[in-house]
Image (cartoon, rainbow, N blue to C red):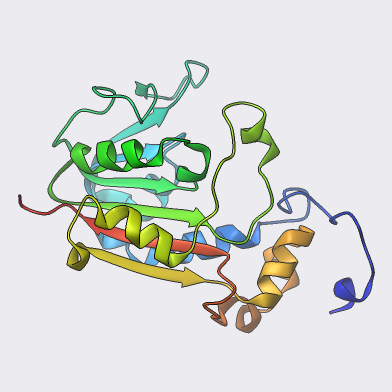
Length: 214
């Protein structure tokens, strides 16, 4: 690929927002499409309900949106996910949490509260970044704190739910990681290049977390 033959100190774009669809979103949406059977009933999503509507379709009975600040007119729940009583307990059949934990400093409290918010048997669909640049938008507003591996994400959730209730998936390879950091878009790689999996180059880590009965 000719892009990588040039010695550049700056990316072609920031998250490819001006070039097309970001590479990390290819993996996130593949994960959600694979697990769309869980997106049903009462669904909570962070910041917007785009994925709730896209993948839940007619199976969604009620859609809520969580946002940290008051400046989101579509938010139905406003507050800090790490604080008690922000999320109602035992309420949601599904919680879609994409690319959120990286901007939460107290991630352990956020994880505990997210699981508490699910009904028994409810599912948390979570994605986090592995190899990624800083999100300047988030850094300048509420912070950008963490990057993850499949092991760190598993260990965090094992503190809250049994290991058998956790399914972890990884997405990415050295080519897609470099392309993502350079700010290239999905269409600038082939499907074969995007789909190749190398667990040593994790661009996105995703998890299906099921709330246990007790």
